[in-house]
Length: 155
Image 1 (cartoon, rainbow, N blue to C red):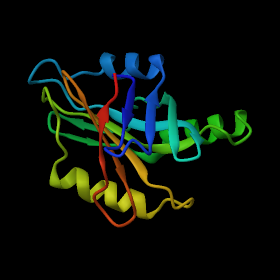
Image 2 (spheres, one colour; image 1 turned 90 degrees about the vertical axis):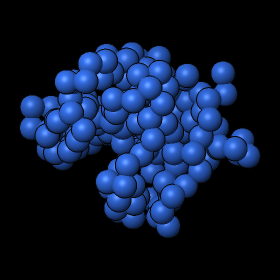
Image 3 (cartoon, one colour; image 1 turned 60 degrees about the horizontal axis):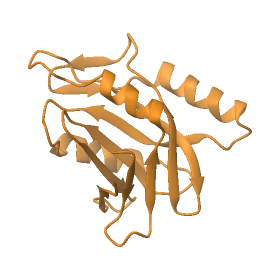
C-alpha cells in the first residue's frame, strides 16, 4: 500500500510509513464516523513524488459523514512551515480525505474540487488526490485539464 504507479509506470508515488499510519488512524470504520482529510506534503523527484507528511483535520474543518471541507488556516500554516524548514524541498503535492467505502471512488463533488485545486497550482504540476477507504486507497494525479491517470499499487 506504500507505492503506487501510473498504468505506464512512468510516474511513481510513494507514501512514507508515518503517512500510512495517519491514514489508518482516520478510517471511517462505523457508518456514523465523519470524513477526515488534509494536505499531502512531500518531495518531488523528476516526475516522481514521495509523500512524507500530511496535515490532519483541525477543529475549523467541516466534517460530516459524507463530506469533508478543509479550511485553509491551520493546514496552510503547517505547509508553509514545512516548506520553510526544509529549505523548499517539502512542498504541497495534493489533498487527501476519507470515504466510508472499502474501495473508494471519487464523487462528482470530489472531482470538481480536485479540478479547481489543480488549476490553482502555481508550479503547473498535477495535483495528487487520495481517498482513504477501509480496505484500499484511491490515488489519482489530477492535471489542470481534469481527470488524470488513476494509479495502482505496486506492492
